Amino acid sequence: MKYETIAAVLIIAAVLSALLTWRLIPLLRKHQAGQNIREEGPKAHMSKAGTPSMGGIAIVIAAAAAVVSIMYNDSDTVMILTGFILFALIGFLDDYLKVIKKQNEGLKAWQKFGAQLIIAIALACWLAFLTDKGTDVYIPFADKYADFGIWYIPFIVFTIVAMVNAVNLTDGLDGLAAGTTGIVCAFMTIIAREALANTSTLFFAALLGACIGFMIFNRHPAKIFMGDTGSLALGAGITMAAIVMKMELLLPLVGLIYVLEALSVCLQVGYFKATGGKRLFKMAPLHHHFELSGMGETKVVVMFWIFTFLCCAVALAVA
Image 1 (cartoon, rainbow, N blue to C red):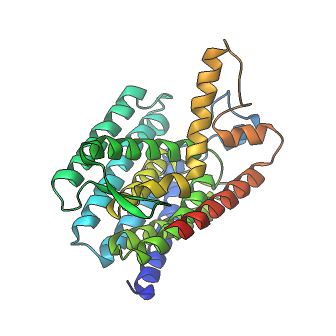
Image 2 (image 1 turned 45 degrees about the vertical axis):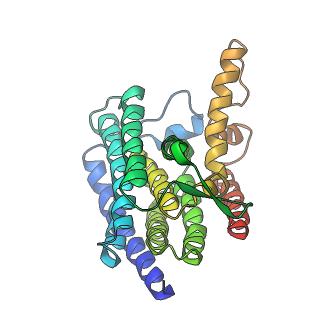
C-alpha cells in the first residue's frame, strides 16, 4: 500500500468530516438536537447542556466515503463498513430518541444491548462461515497464530460488544473519544500496512482523518458532540478492521484506556452493591473521577491521550 494512497484517504476523510460537522452544527441547533446533561454528573458539565449532539453522523459518512472512493469492491471493505454502519445506526436511533424526541432514556438497555448482540453474532458467523479467513487469531508477545475453533464465534461477539461499549463509555469529555481513537487509528494504520492488510490500512487511515476533521469542532469547549452515533461506530470500526487483519488481541493494548474506562464502571457498580452504597471512585467512568479529584477537563483529556500514545507505541513494538 503506497503512502500516497493512505495520505489521500486520510485527507479526503478529514476534509469531508470537517465540512459535514460544520454544516451539522446549525442544522442540529435548528432541530434543537442538544445534549442532555445528567444532574448527577459533574456540575461543571451543566454549561454543556444544549450543545448539538449526533455529530457522529459526519464521522461515519466521511470515513465510509473516503474508503469507498479508493476501494469499493473488496469483500473486507464490505465487512468492515457493514459493522461500522450498523452500529452507527443503533447509536443514531438512541440519539434520535434522546435529543430529537426528548426521551431521556433513549433506547432501553435491553433493546440497545440486544441489537448489538444480534449484529455481533451475525458478523461473527459471517467471518467464520462465509469467508476464507478461518478461526485463527494472532497472539501478541508469543508472535504466533492460534486456532480458536468453536470458541471463535463467542470470542468475536464478546470482542465487538465489549469494545463498542467501552468506547461509548469513554465519550464523556470534549475531544476524549475522538482524540484517543484518532491516536489508536494512527498506530493501527502503521501496523496494518506492515501486515499487508490493505483494507484495514485504508479504513484506519480514513477513521483517523474523520476524527481529525471532527476534532476541529469537538475540542474544548466543544461546539458539537458525536453522541452514540459516533462512539458506537468508532468502537465497531476499529474492532472490525482489527478482526479482518487477525489482530483482535492487540485491541486491549492499543485501547487500554477504553478497557480502564469500562472496568471502572464495572468496579464502581460491583463495589456499590457489595458495600451497601459506598463508592470506589468519586464517579465513573474513570475520566469523571479525575475531574472530581481536581483536574481540569483539558488536563484529563491530554493525560488520556498521552497514555493512549504510550500504549500504542508498545503495541507497535509487539506487532
